[in-house]
Image (cartoon, rainbow, N blue to C red):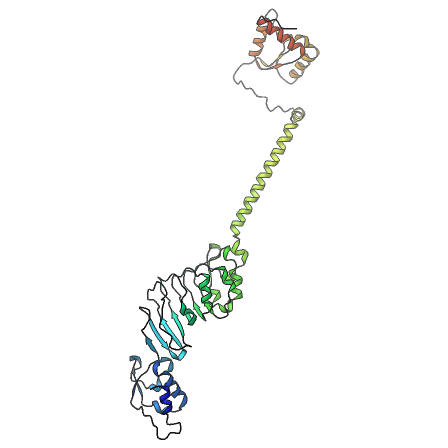
Amino acid sequence: MSLLTWWCLNPYRNRASSYIDLYNSLLDCDCVDFSILKLILATYSHNDLVNGVYCSRPAALYNRPVISVPLDQLVCELTEHCPPGCRCVHRPANSTLHIYCSNTNITFLPSQLPELPKSYTKYKLDFSNNILLRRLEQRAYFVNTSILDASNCQLDSIDFELWKELANIPQVFLDGNQLQSLPSLVTTTTLAKTKLSFSKNPWKCFCDASWMPDWLKLVQKSIMNPDSIICSSPPRLENRVVMGISEEQFCVDPKKRAVKIAVIVSTLTVAGVVVVLLTAGFIVYHLRIRLYTRWKFRPFDRDECPGEDMHYDLFLSCSSNDNLPHGNGIREQLEQRGYRVCYPPRDFLAGGTIQDNIYNAVVRSKRVVCFLTTQFLQRFVWTMCENFSVVPFA
């Protein structure tokens, strides 16, 4: 019976000749009679029309008086275009068409759903607990959806175009997935039309996500349980509430900063020491004569012939013409400082050749020092020429 027929036959519309008697009738207590039963229960205080009327179906309501059945239990299961393994239930009491696909091992969202019975009816989508569901994709039915539950799946990403679709759904549940980040463009969309929940996801709290705390504070009225959005990495921010972390904490690792500072300080210290040493070495090098003279310090005095019995420390080779005053003065200064000097005018053997005396002086001395004067050079040249029978030019 349609609502219009029932209204026309209504005996309480001053039509004494009309009377409807449904006593002991068995009705299907589903969504088909929802509008009539709703109107009857709202119109008549004693509900005489449905007194003695019982439910025959569904089994859960069998033999119950129709008048005792809550309106929200008057539902219809739809099969046409209902996804495999899912239940599709029309609930006119709250104007929703429920799609129950929880824990059905779906790997992607169905492309088609049962048609909405009324223009004002909305989908309520339950795709939760599907561990094979790794990605949400845009669907045309999102426009007519009031609730989307995709919690406890394996969703690991949400692109910006899908985010714009979700922002127009009144309630969205994305808890317990594998979401690690959101596209930063989400800050350009408004969440005034929705309530979002995406806690219990392994959020990465690195510098590229440093915009999240301020954004969460700005939209926290649209976020369900914002204090449950917690960092899983890096270890220094693990289990910290994202909304309570500053931008600096996102981007600056105190340990790495301390190590960096230590490296810089160490480098500067080493560089400073090197500069000081180089400067000191430069100064010592240019003032070495004065320093050695002032402190009587001779760093290069060492015996390079250890174990050899050398009679002299040095052989002072000079011309006999330079004996006084220069040659003899040099000899005196060296001997005053403890050096044993072989000095030709004094120590060469008489009667021996000059070559023999020079040879013996060289091999018996640790060092040879030549006093290069004009007299020495002339004598040296004549000696060399004499030994090789060469007559020099004038």
